[in-house]
Image 1: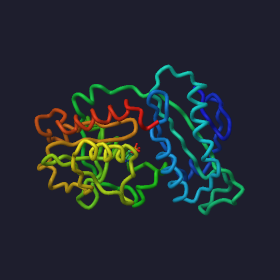
Image 2 (image 1 turned 90 degrees about the vertical axis):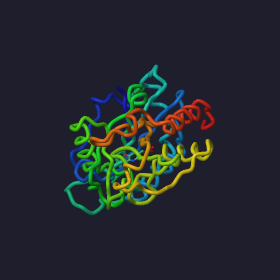
Image 3 (image 1 turned 135 degrees about the vertical axis):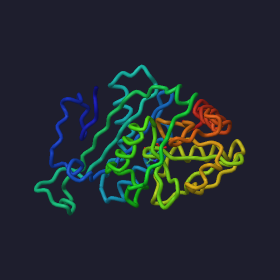
Amino acid sequence: MIVYFNGQFQELNEVKISPFDRGFLYADGVYEVIRTYYGKLFKYADHLERFKASLDAIKINYAETDLLEQNIYKLFELNKYTNPNISFYIQITRGVSFPRKHPFPSADVKPTVFISASTIENDEHAINKGIKAILEEDTRWTRCNIKSVSLLPAVLANQHAVEEGAEEAIMIRDGLLMEGSHTNFWGIKNGEVWTAPLSNLILPGITRTVILEICSYIGIRVNEQAIDKNDINNFDEFFISGTTTEVKPVTQIGADVIGSGVPGEITCRIYDAYLKYVESRNWF
Ligand SMILES: Cc1ncc(COP(=O)(O)O)c(C=O)c1O
């Protein structure tokens, strides 16, 4: 597998990263996950904008963001993928500095840039049957709008989900369902969609924006309001969204089966509209 690392395209096993990289020592970096449909990057401009916002938020000065798109496509080409659905992981850390000290290193230390690609397999089972989620106390920091590589609370929450036979952990802060460990979270009540509002407590998902656009287009009302955990039983449907997740129905939360335990009607309408949006190729 060929990856991009600090200006070079090389075999993964040839990459050498210093243990004094601040990404390794402090999780001092940010990342993006971008996918293709039909061999084209989906919503690239939006992902780039969010990536730049994350870099700015943690004050990493990386001047070459304009080169990322061509490097991603080059990586796609070099790996000779036959599957047109690929996801790209892009990570930039503050770079290497010795000795280990908390403050930023001098301005001449260059950020470390890494991009890898992998194929996305369709998860038909989850789409047709729905997934189980669990509820988890949100122990993350209060800057969840930054796509930071410091993901330990999300990792622990998701691991807990897996141990409970679930796929996602929904993070609860102050009694409110904020988002999944790696997805945005949605509920449907009386035909209206609910999702947490943008704030420093959730990631501004690119798929979230697409779904908001779709709901407006197909005439489904959206309340950008977080669901109270005491109100869960009054909801008819739930789903999660994300770049590789797309739209996945949630048919069980903890021990509670939602509705009749099959993907809800409105979730399916949104999912179908999402697929049509992708197929329309209007986002090219
Ligand atoms: C915490 C969190 N929320 C939401 C999302 C979904 O974002 P997007 O739709 O941009 O993939 C992700 C994706 O990684 C995430 O990690």
